[in-house]
Length: 485
Ligand SMILES: Nc1ncnc2c1ncn2[C@@H]1O[C@H](COP(=O)(O)OP(=O)(O)OP(=O)(O)O)[C@@H](O)[C@H]1O
Image 1 (cartoon, rainbow, N blue to C red):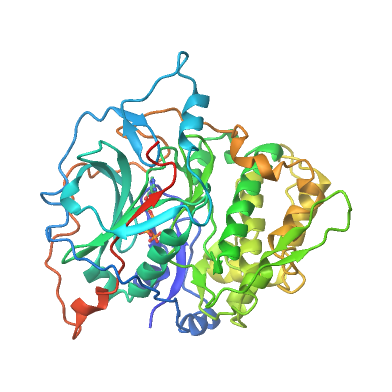
Image 2: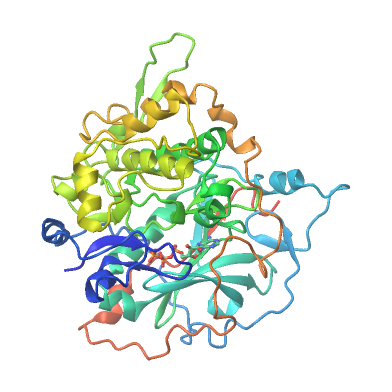
């Protein structure tokens, strides 16, 4: 049994799960997490996760078992360029070298369902050189790496099999691989290779040079965004959620820490290990809009209509009421978390945060959202308050998005001015300055620099047949149309 509620720390380096919170004494958890889990919540947390472990027949085990000790070596002078899929060394410069040129290069890819080609994996750990640590999760680490033969930069997530076994997180890794390998969307991080060695699983992803949106938010004056800027990011998140729902996935872990900034400034959702797949995904249907001037929209709710799950997952301040109650939850949890995210983007705090976890949960269940009115607090429009209130309706059957999914949310008057079709071509409010890896912004300060030291001990396979647990992990290389242009 394990607990699936994760906590998020406001301090740079701390990011862990509630398992850690429970194991450690109250008070060690940072800002968003105080005190022990409510007994009712603990009871709920015992419900298990049932991620689908859909796998590919193309399974290969990489031969390098040292997981980076020798395969990844330090590189002191990356000189990147942008081109197609990975962040490439030697930037093709335009006459004025403008950011717009970088944006164009980054969106040459084709985002259609048949534009991904899955092949037997073409790389091993020794194909990459490690540049630096980008982030840490509880079962692995994410490194900035350079592929030796192409000089392209990638973000490499390295997951320890031993930790996954210990923390019962194998299904989550499979779920994440499955979602990343199937997704092809401009606002969802791209997977290029997945493979394994004796001790580790590797996910080689597009490197998001802008780092965490959470960090970018922290650097804004007052730690919040203007309404129009928040609307921009909300719209991109809605587009990504719409796509995930269409594919039959509920994301379940939306929060600023899981939104990365692409070098163009557009968002990229990452970290899909809490996502849940409907099996099989339902067929999307068409909803007619009230206004004859509006084109018909897709009902994404129908794609996941049959998916109701009881797992107690999420992040404390973002968790939806129905998850706390354990009455089963649907894709409506993603619309709840969008409401919390919009509030946090606008006011720099989440709406239901209490003095400890029980108080937060109590507030999530029973308190109506309040908007700050103290002097100096950002004032937002009534349409903005309206959309947040509707996303934060406690009853998931009445919540905005519960009828036809994303199209309900997109047709709220707050988004009337949003040009949905052109989102990825609009200039984002924050454009990361090209820093090309070595000094990338918005990443937590990492002490560790060069050695890929995934806490050294050898994998202890106490679990009978433990080696076979990972046999079905898909080792593939994914080619996307337009990547190599
Ligand atoms: N594609 C990427 N580009 C740049 N940085 C990334 C990328 N993917 C992850 N990171 C960095 O690594 C951190 C950890 O990544 P992620 O949350 O996916 O790991 P995890 O092991 O799943 O963590 P968790 O325990 O939260 O599930 C991120 O917060 C981010 O800072």
